[in-house]
Length: 502
Ligand SMILES: [Zn+2]
Image (tube, rainbow, N blue to C red; front, side, top):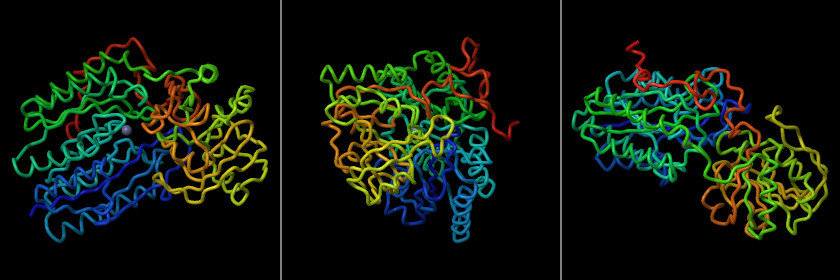
């Protein structure tokens, strides 16, 4: 029975967010426990099920995943990498490993080191120089020369929001199987496309991504093509690799992979001006005006996204700018029901509400991590609810609901995402009955959009600021769109080499 080593490492690291993502933030599963924790829409599940169905022995090592946040702690990353390597060597000592199939995000960054996946792949490759290594990636992966050099082939998700994670894992596993059974010789080509684009402008259900993804699927139908991906990069990481990648894997024919990758790069470059918001999006004050007018018109609940500080895209979730505007606005207090606001990450302020339900408090909260973008709020209000160890998300968190100035504010002890209306319901308030619901999100998640009568994105400040041209990039390679405009681009000249070819 052929033996395939599997590992998964997922984090999207925001270099503008000062928080260090560490052990407390990661969910780490070891060895065969991974089999007991497989989720349906997960690339690692697609990898494992496909390999097992093909009759392989899967050797599970480590599965590590955290909600997007600031860059990852160096020691934690080294620990995870060491543990995977230790398990790989132990498995190899028992019987030879035939291949490695990984489930990676591709935009994980480590404090004091830089790219995470490239160094991990480099170490794996140095230990296993001759066996196939394939990996699935997130669509928002940032390709690097080290990653390109040390892996036989990647394949990225083709949907955003990501609903095809299982299928992408399945495709990575199928490339592994093709290499082991049919002697497929994976040849990968990568063309850099100098564009920074936010996820909110690149949903795959609308143009231009709709046609771009259709083009990928067409390429994948061609004889000899194993995978074709647009790796869109992650714009809130300031490093020289940030950009889009057109990436194609072909069987035994590097020239074919290169031709197709160049054509895909030209295609996406030609659509660069078409990336735009498909949700209504306005600067902060205008967003409030539009929202209050929508309430007048009876379009409730109106949803507002505090998009510049979106924890699910890696922001600190403690920026207070938009909340301060809401609390200071006369119109907020004149509503029949409080505005629901989810929320502010502040462990200290959250804990100060414990055991105080029904009591009036003066609290200072917010801007404890990101001290640059906004300042803390001090306000008197009433604690309306408190939940210990709320655990519907990826991390457990105490939650408080603090009412002040016409706003029900969720305070969170952990860096949680505001992805589900259920959080408000658990805290005893009904978003469906509210006039205005504000969430620190970009585009709304399906459960929120199912109840939103109107959805407005407020272009607020924070480390996921949607207006990329206002961010202080220092390391991104220039020129790059949209920071630079009107520069010439030739896909052929941006065909990237492997380190070994330099
Ligand atoms: Zn993604």
